[in-house]
Length: 362
Image 1 (cartoon, rainbow, N blue to C red):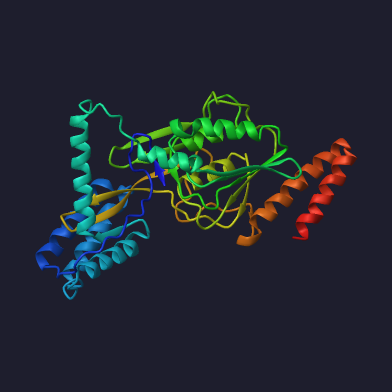
Image 2 (cartoon, rainbow, N blue to C red; image 1 turned 180 degrees about the horizontal axis):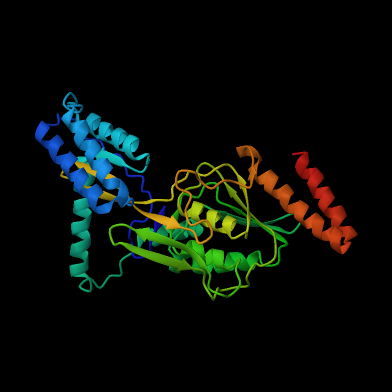
């Protein structure tokens, strides 16, 4: 997931499923939902040049009475989703029939509004449960260790907001600062909040501010640049081999980090092609019963001038799932062996060869 610190939705959200009674959808509501979808596509869809074609296609489908035979709400929503994906070739589109969820969202917004009005009246300090849970998960840094051969290993499962995770990032990078190579494991990382990605990425760049990525937002019409940080809270990790592990579950902001590091030649990507979720979405209520996910923004990498939408991040070294870490470990050792040979460090060579033999025998 990709989120800004201000809470703007910049990434794909997996909405919860609620249990609700299934009554029948009326023709009038079908027409209303289709018209509302067309309005939202016209106002929000990231590729404005496709809007007219999408809406004309929806009109054509509606005129053919395709939806007339559909009696159940969910069947109608599923048909709309299937058609929108077929028309646009964009898998982010999704129409949902979920009145319970829509009601819950509206009640939550009202509670937030009421809490803001009441702020300052309650002397008892409120607990930030999001922060509490993030803290219990070590802010998404699930494992940090030094592998045999002085190779650092960092497992990241989520990108928490930068003001939460920055001290842990700094401590993590301090822990691996004196390693000779580094493996960053993003195979289970489902996304999170920017600019945590560019802050961690800054450790692999010199102090100059570098354009990390840009994002075009259709509703606002703005293109927002994102840069690496001139200052980090520790020693930068420069001129050392870095390997990033990805897989099919690597998603959104985790893909962005791997994609940027790959195309800046800062890391070797190892594993399987990632999910391919670069576009950010908004979840828009259409009426009391229906809502739609619409892609509203895309990324622009300064090197490729595009992003990983639909294609995923392509590994430099493709592996079977169960072999990913082993292959990365062996690749890191090979880099260290090359350096040891160059500097004629015979003791280190013997040590690396021994570790390689142990890994290959696992």
